[in-house]
Length: 123
Image 1 (cartoon, rainbow, N blue to C red):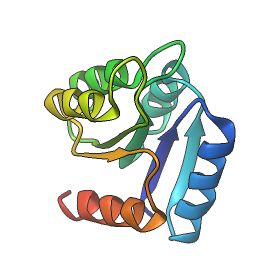
Image 2: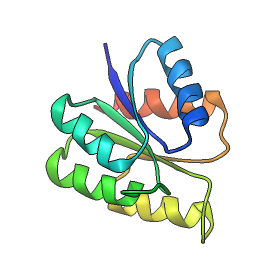
Image 3: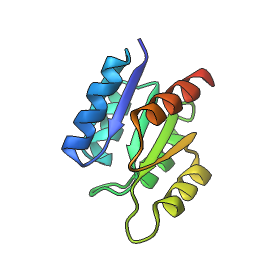
Image 4: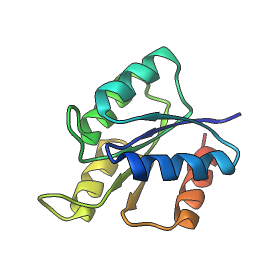
């Protein structure tokens, strides 16, 4: 079973996505911040990481950078609703740093399902 690590500091949003991904047949682990995500990935590597970019402790861009250094083959989907700058700007940087796909919040469950299946098909 394909394992996905879902990283977002918004508990309700993360839980909603986790339930939906589980319904799609994936094994889902969740982390509320970047530090926790990196610890989970080091202990039990996921096949795909879906991460928010703006979070406390360790932001998504830092996660992507560390994952590309330590786990270069893991697939990554970055998601963002923006912050001090537009979401598209954050997502462009995430792509340059190694994210395989990006999703701008809010996005549909169909868009999520499509991005996940496309990224996993490239593995």
